[in-house]
Length: 368
Image (cartoon, rainbow, N blue to C red):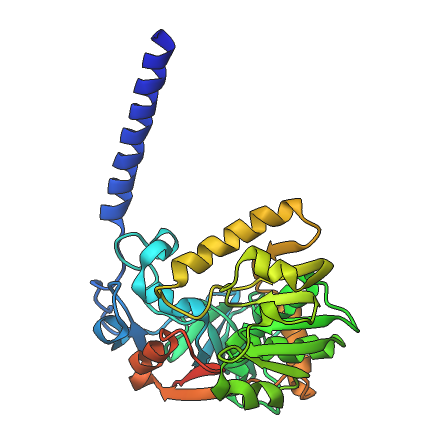
């Protein structure tokens, strides 16, 4: 009985401590939206969101202080920004609050994948010079200017790509690393890409073909031609056919949707095959999102006891891999599939389209 009382009161104390900590962190969570621009400081235009909510309600075009690069940074004049699947979730908050800020977003300028030209460089920077055209990944880039570390995820832009196209290339890191490092795709493999018409899926088709795989893309009726044009050997229209009920077996399933059960996907994997858990179906929160997320975890756990493996992975913003993608884009082997482009003033419309969960190809916002 004594031990039961000790355990009971210990558990209660832990809960009180956790609750108090959460309340403190929540109510002290803030951002710089209330801070005024210092007198004499240079200004720039940026899209900001000071609260969580829908794009129309929270995204505002405002004037903010222009950043100044330190000795180890470059200042980039942003020309284009492409949206990733998680950008919609950042606005809505949800479980993302644990990362982006509990009560309010910590980083009030969204966007991460950019392309532009170098405006100025820090004293220690030798890798870039003013006028160089670059692209890369940097949080808070949906603005006229952004500072990027000299050793950050930034590389020179392919000369044959527009700024809009170059800003779309960093998304391909998800496809490159998922197929190469997690799926271990090699020449002769049969690879199925579920969600082949989205921003990542359109790159995944091309990269799997570069590796020498036979590629099957799964998409809706309206996207069949797009998926074929990117090099898919076979296309399955999910409105007419369920790939998990077919006779074909795959070495790798690159799953960006996770809308099938563990058993269904395992059925069409070859013995020892790999299902790469690369997404949960579009951006933002939808009716199916929770079930898809649960499906990722259950599939991963159940595959620990099977020959066929279901594996998730985290993307690394590697300069080396950005360089590989740059070379592929420059050679024409990996071409961005941009289907929607918006000016900075219509950023809310771009995010609303992203949040439909059925965005086709890449969405780009141009910055003038």
